[in-house]
Amino acid sequence: MTDRAIALREEGRDIISLSVGEPDFDTPPHVLAAAHAALEAGLTKYTPVGGTSQLKRAAAHHFRRDLGIDVPISQITVSAGGKQAIFHALLATVSEGEEVVVPSPWWVSYPEMIRFAGGKVVPLRTSPKDNFRFSPADFEAQIGPRTQWLMLNSPGNPTGACYPAEMLLGIAEVLRRNPRVMVLSDDIYAPLNYTGGGHATLAALCPDLADRVLTISGVSKSHAMTGFRIGLAAGPEWLIRAMERLQSHSSGNPCSISQAAAVAALEGPQEFLSQWRERFRARRDQVVAAINAIPGLSTPTPDGAFYCMIDASPLMERFGDDTALALHILEHGVAIVPASAFGGRDGFRISFAADEARLDEALRRIAKALAA
Ligand SMILES: Cc1ncc(COP(=O)(O)O)c(C=O)c1O
Image 1 (cartoon, rainbow, N blue to C red):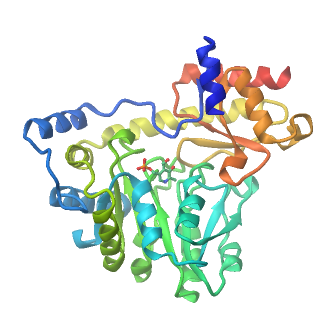
Image 2: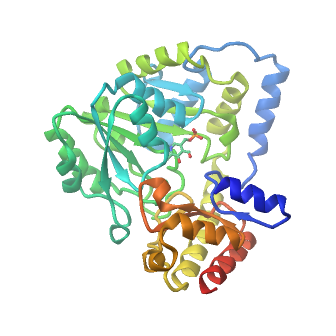
Image 3: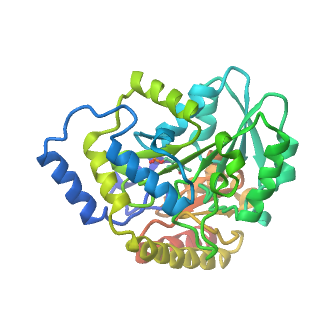
């Protein structure tokens, strides 16, 4: 898909990319200023492997203020993006043949990381009619003697699924009956919850389970800082130490300049986050209305993140599979990602992290491509 998109662009075609997983907003100026100041101050040397004490303190503040999780800094670590934190957590814990339950459609990196660590991916299928959320009973049915982790991503990529507190409490009951299972709660999209009910997360709701939950957060998606590569993790101290040991022998500390920028992001003004959220919410409504008006396409309204998982099953007879459909839409000037890339099928994911006019034009092109 990417190769074809590049080739079309080289031919001079205008391709709108709705495949990206990052906010289109600029990184806030106060964050950039903090990065500049760190350079000027000579903060260009090694830092502690798991992050500076300033950033760990800012992260502890963030976990308490934004997620309701009260953790000391000894239970926090910082890595080069949420991605690295998840990878290290799985590498540090998953042994050959251990099982990890992953709701599908899933974020593309989960299954690759699990398999790299020697683990077995146990898919937990979700459906658009349930807004892509699994029930506690669905989860319990997938647990076996070798189940080690549940990957719980809320708000979710690629579906926008959000788990409200009452669903998390149901999942917690299952966990209490299955004491061996841990939860990797990937909350990287936490500020982008459009339900009005606020973000709910397991470690805050159920302190009795906190020593079995690793919560992932960061600044990449929330503060438009994907290139800075800063991810945060809070969890049991033994796991945090194991992740830091791995990090010390692989990449070492996260970038010192990025850490200073992340302190500014977490300690500085947060009001713009709600303005960004409102922009994303309006774009979501724009996308959902336009998609549901195109014959053959349908989508539930995603509750969070900036993705929409679209069902195109009525079009499969015409196109064969969702990759062929995605290539067809690409020929009409829009890059999207087929659902099969996420362990789904017969559909595609749109990212609405693009400005309103480009989104409008992209949706027009998709309608035209499918009418053709
Ligand atoms: C669900 C999910 N988790 C984690 C990440 C990793 O984010 P980061 O850029 O901080 O590594 C992403 C990024 O796409 C994501 O979509």
